[in-house]
Amino acid sequence: MQTAKLASEVWLRSAPAQVVVANDHFVRSLVRSGLPPGGPGRDPDGLDAIAADPAVLREQYWQRVVRAKPVAVHFGAADHDDLDDYFTVAAERSTRATLERARTTISPGSPADLLLRSIDRLAAGKGSSPSEACRDAMRLLAAAWPELVERARPAPEAAPPAVASVLAEFHDALRAGHLGKGSAALRAGHLGEGSAAGRAGPHDGPFDARLTRVGVRELARLYLLARRCFTDEEVRLAQRLARHPRLRYALLATHLRLVAESSETAVRLAADWGTTRVLLPFTEAFVNRTGYASPVIDLAPNPKLITVLCNNVLPAVAGELIGRNADENALDAEVLAAGVQAAARRGVFAVTIGLFGETERRDVASLSGFSRRVCPAATPFAAFCRQWLPYYFDRCPGASARREPSRPDAPETSISRASRPCRTC
Image (cartoon, rainbow, N blue to C red; front, side, top):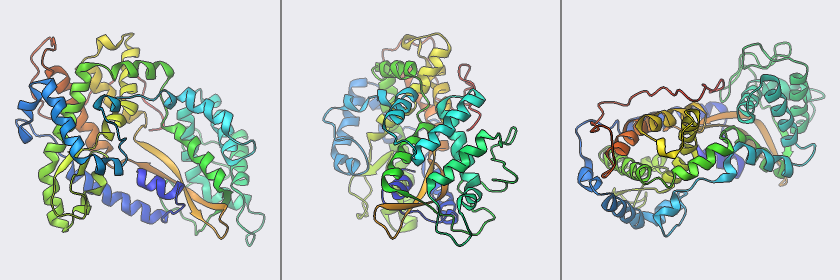
């Protein structure tokens, strides 16, 4: 997902929608076959002995990180000298902070400003959060983009319109109430019918509009609001959870288990494809210490995953506790499993992005539509976390568990009692 975002938003290179869909299907199939289901009764890489002592577990985790840190840093990990520094929850990722930053930095009349006005209108009209309204707006735009571009073009043979003009058409349609009742498709006449985010619609393209590179950066920062779906209270509680010793133990043990159980599959995948480069889609979770030009496979955890979980899952766990009028001292396996599920439901593993491209002018880019990017590991990885995070949380040596935890047979579906389902996910 991150690679696709960078290609579009930084390098202004986007594949056609059909290619994006085909590539997504391939990567999801690869990841689902490569991430382990976590079979019961297995003790991969002698993990049970390591996990018997939290200090040993921490030491083993850090040793493996240090050995492969240059590769992990290349794939997005921070170059910290202390393991504790990876357990962080950034306050600026809350909905309020993201929205406040947008309102004070976006240029008046810019494409991002017009989109923000539409997000505000959707939020006010539906009584939804800004994050949910952003997801609504992006999905509507993705469905209706070809029609909107044609409406903004003064004549069929005219030059591509400005993105600001297209988004002004979109805002006018919202203001006029052309929103399908109970539907995610924008309707002004037949506007937006029959097409979907990230898929080729019934139109012949290209449906390009133009904006400046500054406009690209503003727009890309704004629609991250869709994933910044946590309140300040949830973020503050998540920051305290990130210091919870049992939760840190569970995160480290689960990550080591993921790497250990993936090793056998990684060897098989590399043999089948004849290259270790087939392991590149997994670098968010683990990296090959010897790199991806070497045939030798020696997997190590990418500590970036700990920070990703802290930023994106712990606030959802915090939301479950807040819904129970509880604090971090009430954290248990049930709340932990429900938080993992709530994070996926609240959309932290998905984002709709603009399909940007270069033009003949260095300071001007094109926008040909939008594509919904879903982390290909979201489903199997969330299931793995629901299975093993609660298990290791209960199993933490010295923890006063009410009962002796048993090794789970399969990922359990934990139904959240605190957070209402998101209407847009």
